Amino acid sequence: MIETRFKIAMLVVVTIFASFPIMGILRGTRLPPVEPDLPEAPVAGVQTPGANELPTDEAMVGIPAGPFMRGTIAGGFDEQPVKSIHLDAYAIDKYEVTNHHYAAFVAATNHRKAGPPSRYAKNMSRMRSINQPVVYVSWDDADAYCRWKGKRLPTEAEWEKAMRGGDKRLWPWGNGIDPLASNWAVAQDGHEVAAPVGSFPRDVSPFGVADGAGNVIEWVADWYGENIYSDSTDSNPKGPEFGTFKVLRGGGYTTSGTDVRVTSRNKMVPDFRDETIGFRCAVSGGQNRDFPRAAKSEKVTGNQSSRE
Image 1 (cartoon, rainbow, N blue to C red):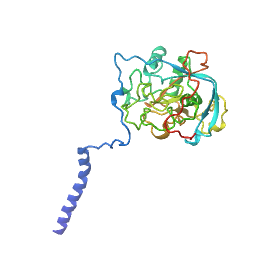
Image 2 (cartoon, rainbow, N blue to C red):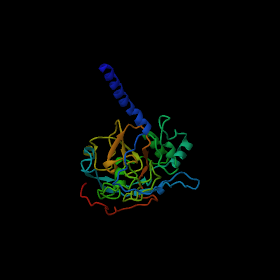
Image 3 (cartoon, rainbow, N blue to C red):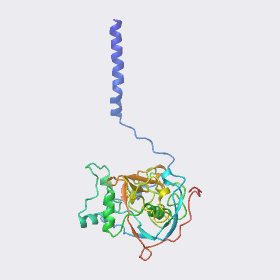
Image 4 (cartoon, helix red, strand yellow):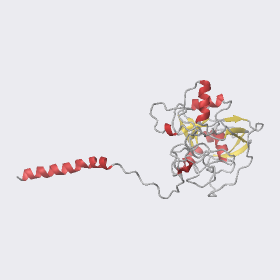
């Protein structure tokens, strides 16, 4: 009799424990709470394709010849040493290359369309606005587009100078983190994916170049070199001659932490394509071209940090 009761008790216990996963499925999964300390912007800034939406122009910004301070002691070991680097004059796209302009390239050259290497891409339907940055492009795709436009990918040093200016700031707007200044992973800013280029007025460099700290991460020309800051020349550096990885610069809409700093360096194999990666182009010279130019950096705003 005791043995029978024990068996019945064990059966009840096993049944109760076995029911827990089923109860969880029926109740559903709770989402984590929204970070309470972060400000929230209205969702009115979200833009979707519309019949009256005009494509963003292909403006370029002229960057004058001269030195800038590359790297920071506030970052990773591959961002050091901090050094004054001279660059010749050049011009760089004010905005990341958009879907509209990349589609024109595909139509003219029969180059492959921007898209994931597989059929699955959960966010593609939300990233097809004509003024959102083109994504799912490899380094070779980006290089081919820039060459078709009579341009090239910017070097890593050119990208950093264009986004940083001449006063060693860590973000385009200054040295203080601002959750709503750019399109990155932390802020509830109304953009679940990449925003139309130029949507964040504060994410603009002293030279007037947009979206350096957010929106999409960008391919640049250089092969990645871990110690290149120690080994490279002080004038017009171009990275290693060969390598395994190409450099990616800037923050994207999924980026968090200090990776949104304009000094932060990332790397990836050149044939990689992802919904967070885009690019912009540059041209050598620029001083004799009809580009807007800012010869002096603006005063640093935000936290007046002395960190390099």
